[in-house]
Amino acid sequence: MLQTSALTYRYRNGKPIRFPDWTAGPGEQWWLSGPSGSGKTTLLHLLAGLLRPATGEVRVGEQALTTLAPAQLDRFRGRHIGMVFQRLHLLPALTVTANLELARYLAGLPRDGVRVHSTLERLDIADLAHRRAHELSQGQAQRVAIARAVVNQPRILLADEPTASLDEANAERVARLLCDEAEACAATLVVASHDRRLGRWLPQRLDLAEGRVAA
Ligand SMILES: Nc1ncnc2c1ncn2[C@@H]1O[C@H](COP(=O)(O)OP(=O)(O)OP(=O)(O)O)[C@@H](O)[C@H]1O
Image 1 (cartoon, rainbow, N blue to C red):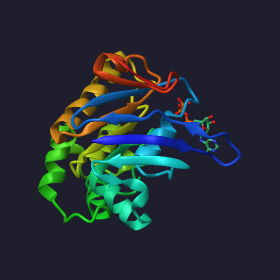
Image 2 (image 1 turned 120 degrees about the horizontal axis):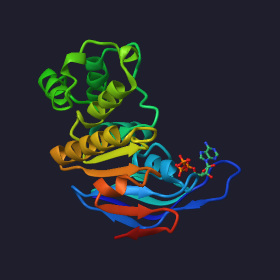
Image 3 (image 1 turned 135 degrees about the vertical axis):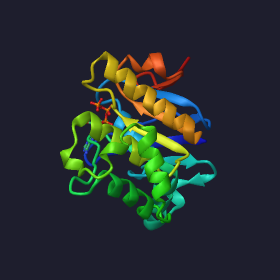
Image 4 (image 1 turned 90 degrees about the vertical axis):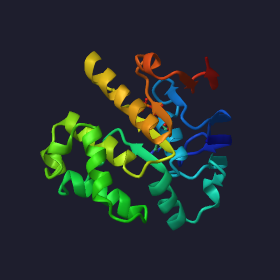
């Protein structure tokens, strides 16, 4: 379960951004919508514990993220939260396999070649296992970023604008991949995007423009 309460964030020299109180259950799939500048990326980063709130709290299950020391938070994130960043942030000089192995290492998990391989197979990129990340096409790199986000079977899967600038067929493919992977982990999925097409694939919506949960 993922829960926010009385959550605000303030960038230096900026006004506080207030987020609605919100609860997302295990296995639920949410579209985090809102116009440019409404705070979608900021909220995703708060949910991932990459930003520290000015006030309020994010809970993942029973765990309140602000009570964790930085090293504990890094490990908790690695173990329980998968994130697909807008700019992917793969390590370009490492192979696809090494990018996934690194995600396990940073979470304090043992090496597991079988799991890495089966994750790549599920995403239909096992043939890319030994390619370096900088040798991939954008679409291939995005699949690898999704594989890296799910290789530790997270409880929470977050994605930032994964369909931006994709045509209809590819947007649908990526949305379905995220939904299928979240389902395979029984994870809560939250996809931040101003792409209205996501409403077709994600059953629940939190709209930051209106600060409310939409049906
Ligand atoms: N690093 C930063 N420093 C200062 N202000 C920031 C920073 N990042 C974002 N902001 C401001 O915080 C607000 C929310 O930004 P955020 O990127 O979370 O919105 P968004 O809904 O994800 O936008 P977009 O759809 O354009 O990506 C905006 O007013 C933005 O200008």
